[in-house]
Length: 125
Image (tube, rainbow, N blue to C red; front, side):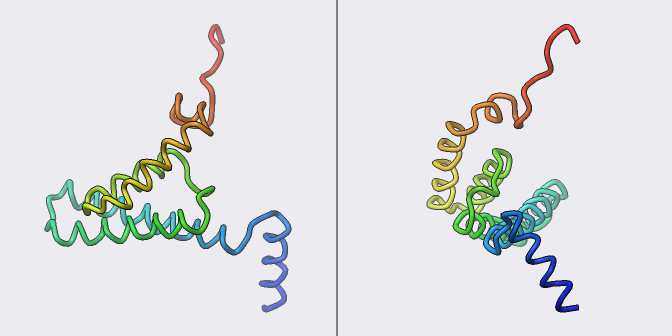
């Protein structure tokens, strides 16, 4: 079993997937899960304290991912990271994501303009 795990790890490392990248992706997934859960609670009008605690966890996971590897973010993820941190009045973290969004927009103009990395289909199809 150890040999199989080591082989898989070696394959990922050869493909450019570092331990840090995987850890950042883990935090992104956790942050998105927390954000979705808190948003669903908001629509059901659950207790604000419980909801804000979950937004806090989401914000914290987004910050951990950002500090480990900002390359795992997309424009959408940056936007929800900003929102999660704003919900808990974490002005320092929300400012971090606002500044990151501005820098990201400069580096990814197509995604910023069209909402994803794909340009619109040509006319006259």
